[in-house]
Amino acid sequence: MFGLLKRRQRPAAPTRSRPTLPADLVRRVRRIEITTKRLVDQGVAGDYHSAFKGRGVEFAEVRPYAAGDEIRTIDWNVTARMGVPYVKRYVEERDLTVFLAIDVSGSLGYGSRTILKRELAAELAALLSFAAVRNQDRVGAALLSDRMELFLRPDRRRTHVLRIVREILMRPPGGRTDLERALWPALKTLKQRSVLFLISDFLDAELSSSLKSAAARHDLVVIELYDPKDHAPPATGPVVLRDAETGRLATVSGRRMARQHTQRRQQERQELLSLIRKLGVDHLQIRTDRPYLSTLISFFERRRKRLAR
Image (cartoon, rainbow, N blue to C red; front, top):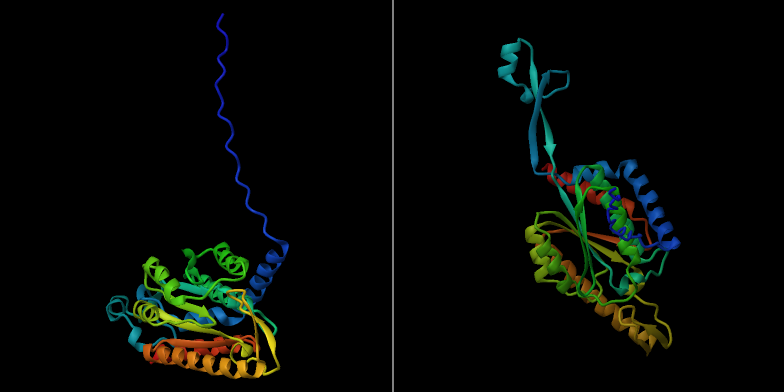
């Protein structure tokens, strides 16, 4: 009698459990998703579509002429064969990639008004991404500080958009700003020409060669996150200040510091605006003390009119 041979079973592979996200982070991501998707549904997706064109148009079909069709769209060969007017119909060939280069350094953890700059960056990223996905465009992102923290390849999925938002919000506070250094690896990794949104408060940010390269290779849009007290702190007596990026504390004369700080910020901002004008790229200022939707819609409208010329 032959005994039954038992097949040796391999031990089951350990299952990877996804890390549990903090409840507060989940709520913040969900709030941003609900808020921005509602704005997309209310018309932002259409405004976005008209402002950012794809590679061109391609022929789709011919169909019978209808009242209101332009005469120049008539297909005279088909019309001659059929004995009644036919017109050519074209569809836009988008194949568009949107890429978000987002500053997540320590200074983004500040906000003197109703919203932190990091929360504002996350909302803008979500709004632009959901509008792009609604139009079947791909969205990617790079998180920047004094280096490239993370690179997410372009994708069209809703879950991909939510990951971008989650990664922005969950970055630990702190970290220096060096966009000139951090932007280069993102540009080298991003192979395809894209609509490139650079989102930052641009505090102590020296940008020259990397911004020129971005403008030469991509359709660059600079979004400046602006908090009033970043540029004009209150002129008070001696105060203790903490640097958001280094954590260092310093006691300074409030009035003298405020005057010097304001002058330095004004000079830095003028240099940034001068470079942006020289490169001929789009620039938006999104403030923490005002609603941003009207600013974004006005920008889309200006681009639409410019493209229509």
